[in-house]
Amino acid sequence: MESICVLSFLGINSYLDIRKGQISLCLAAIYAALGILYIILYGQQQLILLVGAVPGLLLLPVAKFSGGALGMGDGLVVLISGLYMGIWRTLEFVTLALLLAAVWAGFLMIFKKKDRKASFPFIPFLLAAYALPWMIRAAEGWRG
Image (cartoon, rainbow, N blue to C red; front, side, top):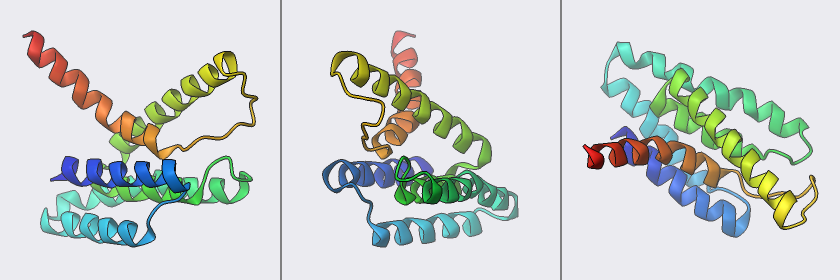
């Protein structure tokens, strides 16, 4: 259930981030409620998943004071995704997304002659960071 919720949430918001530069607050509220319900249904040992929201909570003030370098929607998406994944997977996921975004920014600066102030949507990198480990495991399974 977790992977379906996170993939669909990130997929829809990636599309919205690319097309409109924003996320759906209604969708965010629905997925947040589902995440909390997920925690409640899977018992007290899953309450630790609430801690997974901490990286997103920390990104919200960064977004507020970064002058638009990171959007509030990015922090909110990390917060909600963290409800499903727990703290360690959320930290890994955000770190990989930042690495992927840095590689893309380097590509843009080198080959497309963009300056370091150029902006691009971040949520697609969150989607890629979430999906990449699944794709690698699937590829390893196919090789035997």
